[in-house]
Amino acid sequence: MSEALDLSSAPEADIHAHRILILDFGSQYTQLIARRVREAGAYSEIHPWDMKETALADIAPSGVVLSGGPESVNLDDPPRVAQAVFELGVPVLGICYGMQAMAAQLGGRVAASEHREFGYAEVTPIGSALLAGLDDGDAGEPMLKVWMSHGDRVEAVPDGFVVAGVSGNSPLAVMEDRERHYYGVQFHPEVTHTIQGQVIIERFVHDICGCPGDWTAGNIVADAIASVREMVGDGKVLLGLSGGVDSSVVAALLHEAIGDQLTCVFVDHGLLRHHEGDQVMDTFAEHMHINVVRVNAADRFFNALLGVEDPEEKRKIIGGLFIEVFDEQAKKLEGIEWLAQGTIYPDVIESAGAKTGKAHVIKSHHNVGGLPEKMRMKLVEPLRELFKDEVRKIGIELGLPREMVYRHPFPGPGLGVRVIGEVKREFVELLQLADDIFIEELRLNDLYDKTSQAFAVFLPVRSVGVMGDGRKYDYVVALRAVETIDFMTARWARLPYDFLEHVSLRIINEVDGISRVTYDISGKPPATIEWE
Image (cartoon, rainbow, N blue to C red):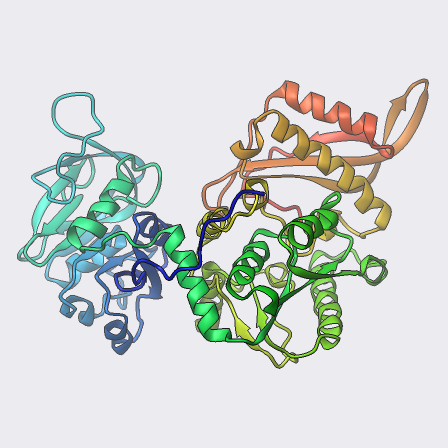
């Protein structure tokens, strides 16, 4: 385990003093905008486009970003930018639909384009303040390589604006009102396909909005520790430790903040990866000296799953039984006042959206180990402001092993949804061994960090195989590896054939009971990343 930094002091600055407000018009990239702003060193918050005007004033942002969205400003009742946004006296950046909405509402004109732009495009800056000096071309006139996704376009800019960039199909690809600090870009600077996108966002955040860059891993950790200490005082805190990234970072953070006031309950449901339960205890109990109570409940989970094949029913059984076991253990502990959870910012956004009807409900398996309603404890959620990439960064800051912090995502119900159909102990044990070989070889061949998620899936079908001089009917596993930026879309990983052959041979030779290995080449969409 790496050496942790001295985190006993308060943060060097108020990390929430400067914030960028992002108004969400329904773009699939809205969370990515927020992450890019934070990567630039400024705190960001996402709120729906129709948030209450009083709330706008309460947030007191240093700047506002208007996201893209799927609608047209020419609809009868399109999503609109609240007039209060333009009365805050702060810079505004409109992206795609956000630019069109700003243009239409301030007196410009937006119309459907004869030639829609989806994908790669080239933008030529024209005296732009936002894009000054940026160039992706080799020589001659400055040019930016960007990502477009729009059917409408701005036909005329409002009074006070100038045209600051053009593309092949968008004669008004960039517009600027430099006196009021209003900027609009038809392209998406938040996606990696826009080469200078992060630089553009940094310019808006630092040069235009004046944010100093205090949103750093060290300051976030120091702020979280100070907040936990103030909130909890000398109270005792209980955490359901799963071994996943979020709960692991919460455990490390709370231990740093309140030491022995923290007790972790680790419910081992038998559906973890190979030797993962022992690894959790070794890391947190042995090395970090955190009080961890391990509950070996595998028999209860396997018995509850007998005969169950439906994926959603499996999730509900595993999630419900987890809470039941956790609750039983919690009742044995005295003086617990607080329940800690690894809630992160996307959970907060999606849960709020589910209540308002503006976002999809989180899949049930994301909530395994969630707050039991009957447990009357106060809630502490030290990660609720953070995206997953930020959680990983502060995990490193807290001294957690990199291989733990940067592990691939693992579903809440564990291998319960990677064993297709009925979950039997023998199936899980075979899958654990096969999956362990796959992950081990990915690490040995420097391929693990080049994939976003990789795992094995157990298929409850028998296939003929030849072992020595005899024929055997044994089970099949599928290997799955994908590459993705946001997990909303994914491409199957082009792993080398020789590597796949080697992994297949190892699994078949070393795992008695598996006779065939397949490789999943489905993308998302139309498939999902997980099989269930």
